[in-house]
Image (cartoon, rainbow, N blue to C red; front, side, top):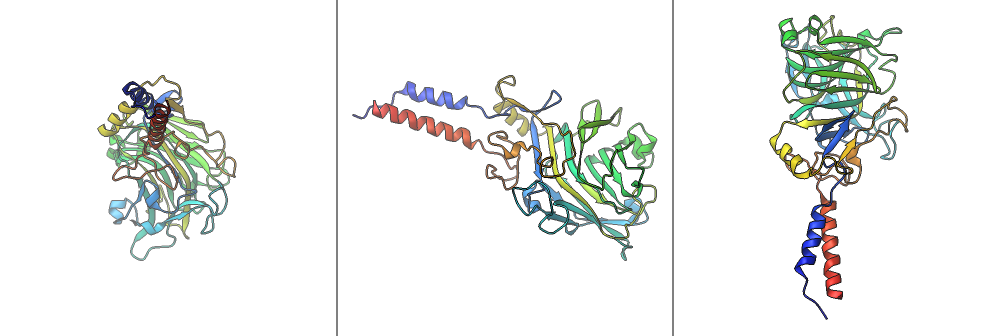
Length: 374
């Protein structure tokens, strides 16, 4: 005989389902610091920019604005998505030949119009305020370009890791660590005249393979890393305190004091991933975090970001960890790509809590069946 569903049973099921938590619901930790949001881009497997959470830049500036002998012409056609031939691989040749990943080209030769073709990409999110950011990069060995991974608000608020290919030789492989600030702008955009600049020699050729470059941005300092090794800490008035966005850039303006060039032939910088774990300045994202994070000390409420301790090249080491490619570890987070667990919606692309919803339906179905059976 069919029985009426007891309200208490239904309420118990609903309460149980509502307290079912996803992993990492309170965020991601780096060296003990908690960040509420993430952005991850797996360029080894992405087919085009529409899936990536990034936007290609499209602009031209004359030489005086570019602060060099040549102007710059940033164009989406200088950005080539070149994923691996197999979705199961993590290293090897891309479908268009050459290194897999997103390729950022600087055009070679002297430009007839005085504008050097360059490539630049920026994250769609502009609410990034403090965090840990890393990328897998292979720089060009062709002299005459500047390859850069950086956070940017404006020319007076910028955190840079810049590589000048003209500086690479058999005995020198430097990375330039930069905090662009109001002081550097006052010095003619020369951070070298401030305490927000350092040159660090790397123990390898950055154009010889992929390596992870990272910076951790705090309120009072910025720590710079390569393959998990701390290179330098910069602090002082040049540390930004406002939200901005991440950028990838490969450019030249012919300035012999910096980028050099233009390169004699097309030069390419290849990116196999970008990952960012950060706090959001957006009030809606902050409200979302407070709603989903019920107890920061609960089991699995926070997830530690794995450290990279070797260069991400080869099928094993290049298979780095993505929270966005795991089950139930990015609920209510902005994640994009081919991952079947990803839902894209409007201005924000948010990972839906479909698993929690499915759990609720399953529990309610079980309760209904048991009540009917009894």
